[in-house]
Image (cartoon, rainbow, N blue to C red; front, side, top):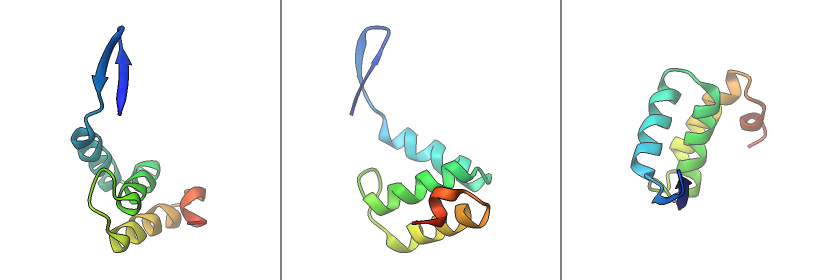
Length: 71
């Protein structure tokens, strides 16, 4: 992925994206839990793992995050 910052083209740092999303998910942020589940389900940023995806969708859904409740 490419992003623009102050007119400069930068590559997206997927390692940091995963790191901070996982930290936020572990702290209980439901949107981060959902996003982490999507990362595991898509298998683009981290290795595909359907069990981890299901677990994170379940955590977010149980906490009331609507998007995770329909996955």
